[in-house]
Length: 559
Image (tube, rainbow, N blue to C red; front, side):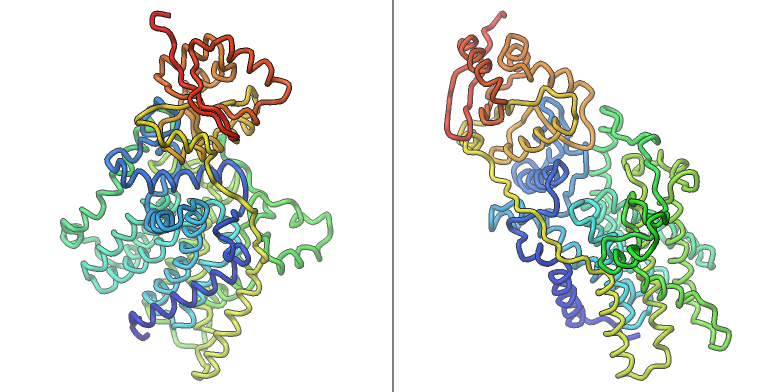
């Protein structure tokens, strides 16, 4: 196999960039003004990336002390931190000031890099150039991955194939440089997505386990020397990220109990949002189990499965495969089976015995491990193409590669990927706060007096977007978890302003209350104005505009 040159890699990158725009159109053409879904998770991802870009400059030593759930600290660790995506989000934010475009750029660049990474992995495994392209196409554009582009922490798994590629290179040639590059990409993945780090850890374990079974010597002394001081330094950011999550586990219970594991329907394994799959499923009887609503979209495509089967189909009439190719196929078969074992629902899956492990207890949906399975399928599909095209001459091989790639993309397509119009512009009242002396703490109002957590979380996530105007601490928050005492703060504030809420906010040293009258139910507005007049000695109107009012809070001393 020919060596991958820098101009060649640039060309591959350009191809995958163009395909990313095509496969996600028209959303990719309106990335500045559209999101793939509207809801609390989208708000959380926009806010998280915005906080990262802000804090990496303003308070890099306290980056995890995000501005939500005041007065708690370390609140960025209540969910995915997305810090590694700052390398894309920061330039976009600084140049455009558009947080929606920054988030969308992150997922689109990640999609492109998934393709490039799959290609690089294929070449490291000695696949041909066309077969390596197929590996990249499968990992980047299969519907189970594209359908999760609105889940930024699942979409940004682009460093997995790069890390595995250099790990394979190290095991084959023993160059310390390859091991350190594998470590660097592992760290990048851990900083970019905690879920991706969990997927990659499983992949590394499989690669090393198969290598040991195949006779690679452990030789721990040499391995440690190859890691060296520079390799150890490259791992330090992983520890830096892990410690806040460990603290969150101990302080606020950041873990998913086993009863959060939802059952996965069998139809999930044969269902995807692609047009081809929809048509095929529609041909089945309405009573078929395969037409049941899926719990998740996990079907990678029929052609992918056929190519992977060709890679594994025994052929007695042909020469035995080279040992390295045989080892790689075995590795990725084991990797695929491992992800299926984690993905399958009860009583068949193995998640019940593994969920408690460090780094896994925060994973809510084990079916997400199938994202690593897609990479394994991509590798096997590449080997299948090389076996299929083994006797083809150069021109015929090139035409075959184009035809197979076009068929794959055709089967993957579920365009148009429209998205929904969305803006994340903070109201003028919150922008006025940005002109005031800092630091200060703030509460946005009204907050819903509702037992429906969806209603409460929707309001909190919207107020988080408001806070992007000033980035000062705020009482509310939405994340993967909440502090245990959040309810003790939340419910009194629903009755603002009254004695209990004003006393509590004053005790917390909340300086400003931002009130958005248009969010107060019409039947409650008169009562709200009466309470404001009644407590005028503790509230001073500092600013008012069409978007809201800003009151300063000053509870009398000694009360």
